[in-house]
Amino acid sequence: MIPYKILIVDDHLVVREGLKMILETDKRFSIVGEAENGEIALSLIKTLVPDVILLDLNMPVMSGLDTLKALNAAQSVVPIIILTTYNEDDLMVNALALGAKGYLLKDTSREDLFRTIESAIRGSTLLQADILTKVLAAKERLEKPEAKEEGHVYLTDKETIILQMVARGFKSKEIAFDMGVTERTIKSHLTNIYSKLGVDSRSQAVVTALELGILHI
Image (tube, rainbow, N blue to C red; front, top):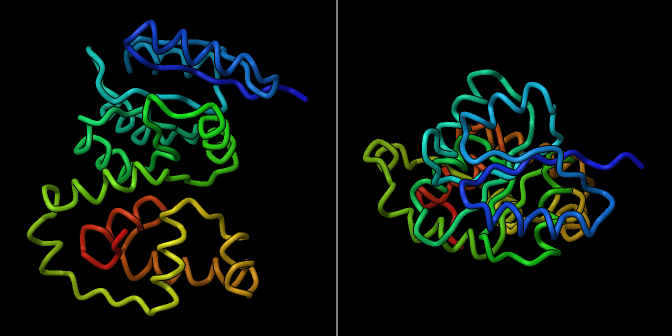
């Protein structure tokens, strides 16, 4: 099996070294490069072509958020996993809206790190319970007046349950099993949810639903 190529972007050497030590214990992952800010990361991505990027939010020169914006502008499809700390709530919520595929606290467990990387590579978004708590805590500060005015979006009970499970990190297949329906049915419900909320990803749906007060975790 060819290992997945990982690029680590963090301005703290001790964090990069710690992540490398953890990831190198599993043959599924290979560290192909590291960068201390987003500007360096953008230049490395072109040559290293990583399968996933572990990205810090608070960095000098170019922050993680600005890096995400630049990658979106370049239409990059490389999945991004955000590394965050407890004082980064506002940045983290903005990163969710920009489509990051995973959100981890820097003291996360080895198992959660591996699980989130695998999920991101598959194209899924995984939200940890502690991150969801942070999102909810930041919701009141980040709510926009227009979001409150447009808070008439109506989700059915079934759609709300599905979105709640999505927010807790369940995959469509797992949700389908729990609800006794097919995976195609769940995906159809998700399409309807995206349409109602005006979004196009799981993470955006969760954040928007929280901002509108539709979803409570």
